[in-house]
Image (cartoon, rainbow, N blue to C red; front, side):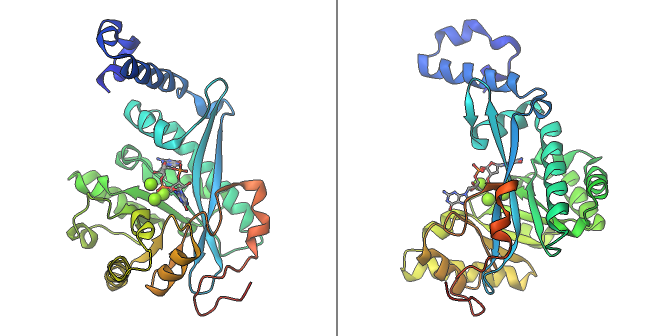
Length: 291
Ligand code: C2E
Ligand code: MG
Ligand code: MG
Ligand code: MG
């Protein structure tokens, strides 16, 4: 990492590293440079993955997920480029671009489906920026989107870090009307005590919990306990990474509120979403229609 961050690429260290490490460092450096101003070059795309109400089987909204297609490197996965953008600060303009895109797309769909909401992932460094809550409010205003139709997804890492800036930002966002979701909950960072301290609205249970649902009683019991705890705290739960019908049924039965995953729908570009708007999913919940 130190290698990739150093300006100009530090050839003397790179030369001693083994070829694989060297190739990785070179790629990171290339990505780092290509991310500067990328939001102005028509290489970014936001795709949207449905969030489904598990009781009624109805579409609640979407999670906005960023895609990047570099002219020579091709598609680069967010898991690879987001950390680079976070480390070098380019996530600031990129993150704003995503927010604006998602807020304006959503405002459009809400013209016909006025209950729909959108969730946007936000990097810790964005949240720490003192101007962030007001920027979010301005972006919503600019697109004509009510702030309560927007949820910001933050990672557990934020809660680990004891900076007052995070708590302040979350309180300000809440005052603006925006909802806050804790993403990938349970992956190993967060202490439960944080859940009562921070003003959260939604708990996104990491897909590892969903993947563990194989019909055995213990994974199911764990999930039930988590959804009960969340509901006692007034938090909605989202189960991520639902890939099979069995996982969907068990998640629904364990009291989870919202589902997301390839089994329900893959993320899609904005212009391919209309077939999903009126759809009813069969989730195993009470209100679900057959089919
Ligand atoms: P995340 O926020 O936890 O998003 C969910 C990830 O799980 C997405 O990966 C999604 O495509 C994937 N996924 C959805 N359903 C399934 C499933 O059934 N099975 C499996 N195996 N995966 C599923 P994606 O789009 O590659 O994004 C990866 C991560 O990159 C995101 O994880 C998020 O942390 C980050 N990210 C994506 N877009 C943004 C963005 O605009 N800003 C920031 N700061 N981070 C972003
Ligand atoms: Mg997310
Ligand atoms: Mg997640
Ligand atoms: Mg994730």
